[in-house]
Length: 380
Image (cartoon, rainbow, N blue to C red; front, side):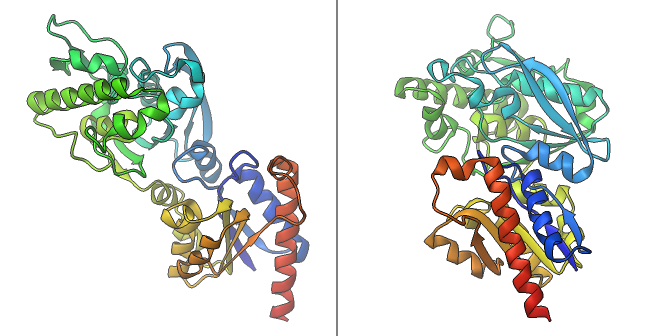
């Protein structure tokens, strides 16, 4: 029997790697000789670097960079098993968790550290990039990232503007004479699961600014800065960075990647599945096991288990999904490729108890073992 395990992390509880081990142990209880392929999974957000490193036999790279508040932070990115593809989570350098709640201010936070991670990977020979955009604390249109890569944004005195969203209104000219020369050899694939444009009512500032600490007046000013920036880019470079689906992601990082770095913005889970060659690896599997911390209506909107299930359905492979919690909406997944789903909870317990990694490991192990005992009995 061949079983492919492709499970997302249970956020706040157990990593995708450890969850895969727990499931594998449960299968081996019943089928000791089973061929098990484990592909730790993520959907382009938190955990993507770890999952792709594990899935491709890559390596983690530690790099100190400028954090969102211009302090130095220790960030980690990955170089995949091919040695030429870097995977970077923008949040590692400019994520909201890096900013204390009482200091959240997207008029000053910067994406400069993201550019430093890109530059480090460039200098290590990487020319292919997989980028996760989720969870930023910024609203600078990606200008900080671009500055770290050699793009210069000049004010009316021909001086380079400062860092942060409040500086965008000062931009008058764009100088690309010092851009890192290797960028023209690179391909950027960006995991982006929002469709927001850069500015306006559905733009980065109005939709995401408040959760990053922006009061209504600041939201208005940040939005005006993004609009001004987009107009300068259109005038100087004849490039529309506003009307792109996903331009407003991560405070405008989506616009910077799509425009200045010619990136492809795409579904996070689809990008991850392509990167790990999921379809190729599952073709001759007897079962696919997937899941995440909670299976609900969000799962059917493009989360990792759905992406896995849709690939498996193409090859008529049964899919079992495991989760800590399930809801009434979960039933819709049966029509979308998930054959059956199960909660791993086996006794009344508090949320705190359920989130304990040791408890989650045991529950995954036991549930999987019982499921495969049933499968073995049926197959007799």
